[in-house]
Image (cartoon, rainbow, N blue to C red):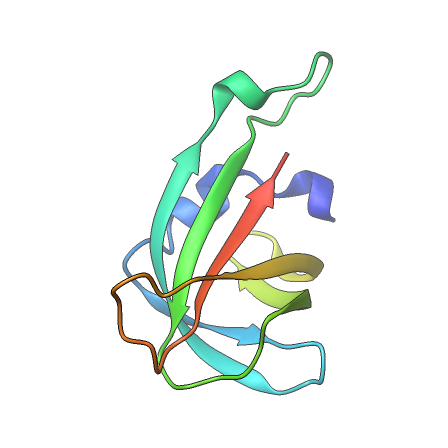
Length: 103
């Protein structure tokens, strides 16, 4: 299923809120902040354009990283998405800031 994920699936979520299901089964409300395609990272013979997604939690969280689940438009439930936390760097330190890379 992960191979089917394209940047278009996240494009529809930009600026919107959603839910990230964490590895422990709990749900974290999130806001999708940005989407960036990275064409220079494209591997030969790979049809998918590499891209990354950044989002933040809407409430405090201790979650750092792991395999998560998200609902994506036209794909439905997508499992085993590796989510990494990034530093707050001047943003609200009470919230979590996250990054997903799709190569």
